[in-house]
Image 1 (cartoon, rainbow, N blue to C red):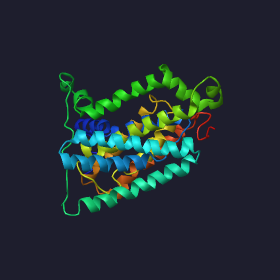
Image 2 (image 1 turned 120 degrees about the vertical axis):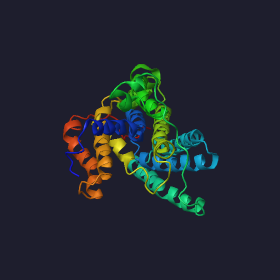
Image 3 (image 1 turned 90 degrees about the horizontal axis):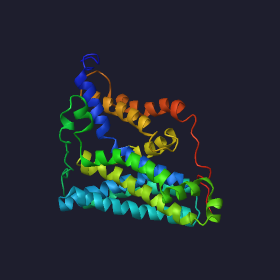
Image 4 (image 1 turned 60 degrees about the vertical axis):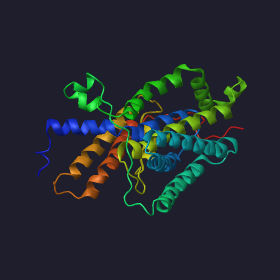
Length: 310
């Protein structure tokens, strides 16, 4: 079967629907990283947070039969991991890159060990997933309906978090403190802002959002747990922050472009087009390289990013 025979309106609609459906796997984490980095803290441990919370959500959902219970537990674990990152980087002043990579390595290894211990007597465990919730009337609109309005509640929540994050950063007292802590912490401190506490709140909130991306894999998307289930999307989430120039609105376009290519290669793997699967798996990552000169050329990070404050 040739690629030309696959390019139809149905193929395009399916690709765009998958693009939107997998958006939460990166979008929540990217928005959380925007908040954290706006305060001056890079969290390269986002991938580790996502891996641990993906397993947490899977295990709790398997034990209780309630995917929302797994989601809530994963959020709690995300908060704890954010507090650990804050303690090490904000209060103790340790190198943010080293701490982030340490959390990633921890998150990469621990879930697999726990999975082998806790599910050694269970063959191919699966869990119930959060069901799709089509929006009445809107879901029946031709073309747009299946693309935008036939998803589960976490997809709608992820998209809603874009304007909410923008409003938080630009039009709330907490947001102004976060920006001040990331741009000029000394001036913010002189003005009465508790820089350390502000950075702690930003990092914990970012880790909480990253936990939603991690949990989405197991309780809203795949139904099962596999090794390295996030496939590096935590690092992709960090890259999207740079592509979006630390704007929760601007990062949406490069994120959707990446997801669109990812959705196309997923569909092509199910068709007999004569291309090896590992070649198709490379396409989304090649997209990242292609996006660099377009979106990252004018990126301007917060002035005090990665600079400890004492």
